[in-house]
Amino acid sequence: MRVNWDDVNARTRGLGTRLLRPQQVARLAEARTLSALAERLRESGYGIPPDAAAPAELELALRRAAAERLELLARWCGPRAHLLAVIFEDEDRRSLRAVIRGAVDGVEPEVRLGGLLPTPTLPSEALEELARAGSLAAMAAQLVAWDHPASGAVLGASQRPGEVDLTRLELAIDRTYARRAAAAARAGDGWLKGYVRETVDLINVATARLLLAEPTELPPEEYFLDGGSRLTQARFAAAARATDVEDAVRLLADAFTGTPWALQIQRWGRDLLQMEDAFLDARLRRQRRAARLDPLGTAPVIGYALGVRVELRNLQRLVWGIALDVPGRLRVSS
Figure 1 (cartoon, helix red, strand yellow):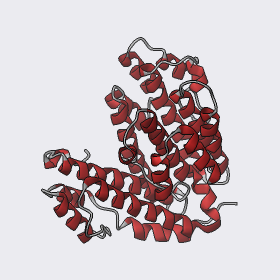
Figure 2: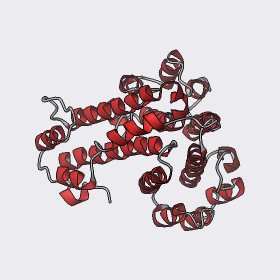
Figure 3: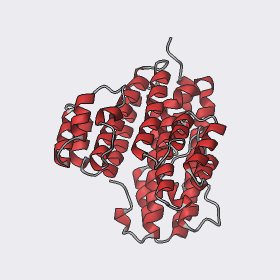
C-alpha cells in the first residue's frame, strides 16, 4: 500500500516558496560587508541575531535556521518520519566524516562544522558537542549515549589499536547508512527507492576517486557499497586502481552512459570536491523535475530537503566570500 504524502507535500510546497531564488542569492552576493549581508538575510526572512557579525556567528545562525526547517519537516511527517532516514542520515554521515577528519587533522572545532547541515537525528547542539570532543573515543561515547545509528562504526574504530584508518572508518559509516537507507526505502515509493540507489552509486564514485588519491591496505573491492544500480564492483575497483585520474574518470563516467552523471563525472571528476558539489546541484534539479511528474509521492519531500542543503551551502559561501573579500560574482555557485 502506497504511503500518502499529500499533507506533507502541500506544506513543503509552501515552505519551498521561502527558499531563496537565484536572483535573491545574487543580490545577497552584492553585500560589501558581513553586517550588510546579515541585514539582507533578515529582510529575506532569516532570523539572524542582531549581534551576529563574525563569519562563524553568521554561519552558525544559518546552520541552525536550516536545521529548524528539517526539524519542521520531520514533525509534519509524523509516523512516516522513519522514511526520511534516507535523507537525514545521509547528512549525518557527511557530518560525521567531516568532524572526525577535522579532529584527526587537529582543525579548530568551529572550522570542523563548516558546511555541515544539522538534522533531527544529529541536531546543531550535537554537532557542536562532537566538534569539541577531544578524541574519537569521546565522539563514540556521545554517539552511543544518543543511540545514533553510526555509533557502532565509530565505537569500533575507536577501540582498534594504533592510528585511525580514516578511509576504513568512513566506509563503516557509509555502509551503515546504505543498509538503513535501503531498509527505509523498501517501504517507500519508486522515487525513494531510486534516490537510495542513486545515492549509493554516487558515494561509490566519490570513494573510488578518494582511493585513487589515498591508497589503503585493504583491496578496493572492500570499499564498495552494495545497493547502487549503475556502478559495478569490478568497474569501481578498476577506477580505484587506475594509473592516473584521467583513466579513473573515464571508467567511472562510462558506467553512467546515458545519465546526467556521466557528464558531471567527465567535467568535474578530476576534483573530488567540485564533483560532489556538481552532483548536489544536479540532484536538486532532478528531484524538482520528479516532483512535477509525481506531486503526490516522495519526490517533493526529497527535493525540499535538497533545496535546504543547497541554500545553506550557497549562503555559507557568501559569508566566507565576503569575509575573505572575494569578488561578488565569484561568491555565487554556478
